[in-house]
Length: 145
Image (cartoon, rainbow, N blue to C red):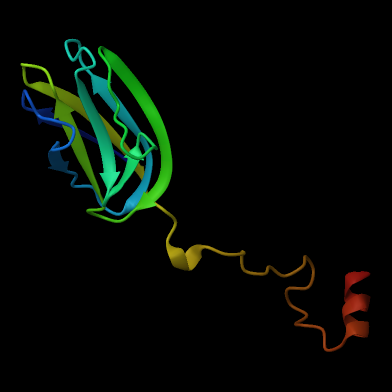
């Protein structure tokens, strides 16, 4: 099942990148397929946002970097599994006005771990009622039918 979560983070004026606004994400354990980041008009590249797992920046994928811009609407493919509570957002704002970023998280369920693996063996056509062969010679005879 796929789910879409919309959220936002507002960073007050004068918030430095060294001490960003931090906002938690209430996402359950699932595969994060993609993140849409909307930076409305007016940010003028004076702001930045990123998605972080513990101390590792996930979006953008480079330590110490931020998504910055003005009138931006980008979708970023992620395709990684995260546990509930793993992710949070950080934002800075060196402008004189408060600014808000809008993010949409697209999640998908993983297959249950017990179901991952090769499929169960299926009987050969015509052999369902005859039972398993008792030796290699009878198996070859049955397969040659």
